[in-house]
Structures are given as C-alpha cells and as structure tokens.
Amino acid sequence: MKYGMAVCIVLALFVSACDSQGPVAPELASEAQLKAQDSFSKIPPELATLTLCKVYTTGGPDVTFTVVATDFTTGSPPPGFPQDVVVADGACVEVAFPDPGRFNVFVTENVPAGYQFVSYTEDFVLVNGTTGSLGPFTENPNMMAINVSGDRGVTLEYTNEPVPGGGGDEGCTPGYWKNHVEDWPAAYAPTDIFSDIFGGSYDVDLLTALKAGGGGIKRAGRHGTAALLSAAHAGVDYAYSIAEVIALVQNGDIDALEAANEAGCPL
Image (cartoon, rainbow, N blue to C red):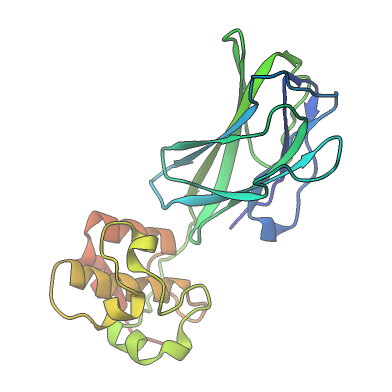
C-alpha cells in the first residue's frame, strides 16, 4: 500500500508559518507538502538548499525524487527544474536553487514497487547554526508556526518499509517465465536490468538472468527473477512480497526462493 502526500517547501532566507495540504492523488506516490505563508527572499551569496534523505526500515533500492520549483515572482521554473534526484538508502542529496530568488518547491517521492511510505521528518538549519525539526509526519502533516529567521535550507528525510504481503502457496519457475514473456506483470520487462532492481553487479537483463544455467550469481539471478515476477503478478499467490524477494536475494537466501518458485504455477 502506498500513501499519497504532497510536500511543498519554500526555500529562501526567511521561513514562517507552515501548514499542511490535504492528500493528493495516489499516483503521486508519497509526497510531503509544506506551504509557507509569508514572503521570502534570498540575499547573495547564500544559497537556499533542499536536502533529500532516504531511510528504509529494512534496507531497499535507490529512490527517485521529482523536484518541481516555481519562482514566486514570475511563476516560471528556475533553470534546471523540474529535475529528478536519485537517493540511495541511508544517503542524502542536496538540491541547490539559483541566487537570488524566491521559490515554491514541490517534492514527490516515487516509492519503489514492493515498498510503502511510512513518514517523513522536516529539519531546518539556520545561518547562525541553530537547528530545528518537525515530524515525523504521515498523512496530513500539521506544520504550523516554524517562524525561522535566516533559514539556510530544509531537509526532508523519507522513511519507507516493505509492503506487507506474501504467505501464498503458488509460484512459477524460471522455466515458465522465460517461455511465457507474454504473461509477465506490467511492472517489469525482459530488458530491465537485474542489478537495477536487486543491487549488486550482475548487470544482465531479466530474460538473460532467467535463461542462465549454473550456480552462484546465475542461480540467484534465475530464481530471483522468477520470484520477482511471481510476487508482482496479480494471478499468483506467491509466498513473498516484492520487497521480501529483493531482500532474500540480497541476503543470498536462494533456497527459499527456489522452493517457493516450485510451489505450483496457476497461470
């Protein structure tokens, strides 16, 4: 299950009185929305920055944040926006905005398949070194009266967790999936790269991974891909969720996936 929340941040020298907006359409994945009520300005050479941080409760893949900005005065996007920002688990990436200017910034977290949004925390750092924190927030965050003078920037830390699921008694083998590409769930394509989904350095496409014989990484690729497709398919009541499949591959527990893949394919 994914939650939709919108976060709009004004990045500038003065920040005041933030409150929340209502939920947005689910297709926006998880967003956070802060609305500043005062006017904002930036004085050179200070640059207002937005820092995006990613945290998983059990580890997970890189996440893409979409950052959309508009200039308060012109209503136009500043150079370089909108932009996609990729953040790894446990990492932070800083987004800078032109100086001078006043900007309304919307951030959308594109939650990976198999995971769901849990919460986000908003921090601010002042020029004089003073820091503050708000959150964690889930749906409909209440962001009132920050009243920050001399704000240098804002940090949003998003936390995700695996989607609960699995526990079924069906599964399709690598042999089935390599010979029935037409049955693949829409979320994945034969040309998708194994390492982009599972991490590591096995840089082959999913169809190649299914066809590869042998042990070691090839066995992990073969059964990991079959498990991924079974977990993602609405017609297969698989033993594990997508997030659990990814975690099992990363932990090297391929025996469990092989057993689940041979439970019996209903397709």
